[in-house]
Image 1 (tube, rainbow, N blue to C red):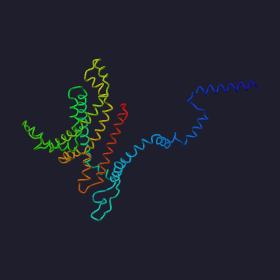
Image 2 (cartoon, rainbow, N blue to C red):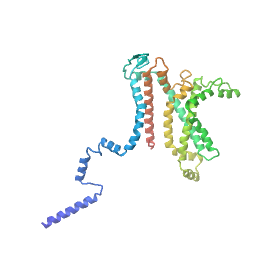
Image 3 (cartoon, one colour):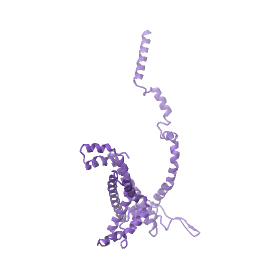
Image 4 (cartoon, rainbow, N blue to C red):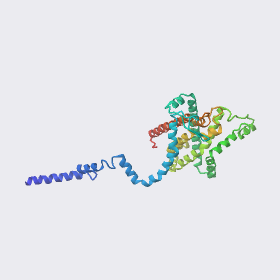
Length: 355
């Protein structure tokens, strides 16, 4: 009897030692079972529980965000859904609902599925517009980034009148876009434009800036670069000012030249900012309607027509207006930009960037 008692005490002591060795973070099977029983349909495992806890914890933030989400849903979400639906129909000016005097005519357009997409993708015009749109976007973003980086590097140094130069270079960004485009249209005028007057004074014949397809493409690129450089410069200047100056001092003490410091310190330090501004600039330029439409209206002919101006032309200028075709072009533009953003994001992740 005494032996049994001793063995029981020994086993109990061993059990306590084992439990103590497991640490405070481990639980017994009974405790774990109770926890599982209470949390199986509770807040830990189910998505509904996580959402409930998030709402309970951050209800104030959700309340602040809700009006913005609602407004965006009405302004952006509903037109987007409506556009996708119209792209699957044969809606045009002739068969949509309309009111003539006191008479209301109901809509008679029909659902046609993906026929519009097949027609657009099979049309050589779409691929011509796509090629020029890509060329226009790449040219504008490349030149804008190069000029913005150069100006930001210069303005990041200490020199007299730096504030005045910064204000002067930011000025194009402050002027409304349509005002800037109309000003450039006057400068590019073949007969009375200031640029051709200057060339004429130097004995150079007038340049058909907006009348020749090649010169028109160069002109719209130049105007868009002029409008985009201030944003690129300001963003990259902020990135330059966030790079610690000690890195440059240490590199200079080690004998690194200006190009080596720029290559191994400046460019890596600007990688995060550069990736963001390049993405934004690409999306904006791809959809840059005002510069093309107000400067050349897609001309001469259709040489400067991009995807977004073509979609506008079908919906508001063509006769009869093709709402389904315009919506199809818009959905394809959105799809192309989404694919680009996904590929861009994946490439950033491969480089170790988080976005």
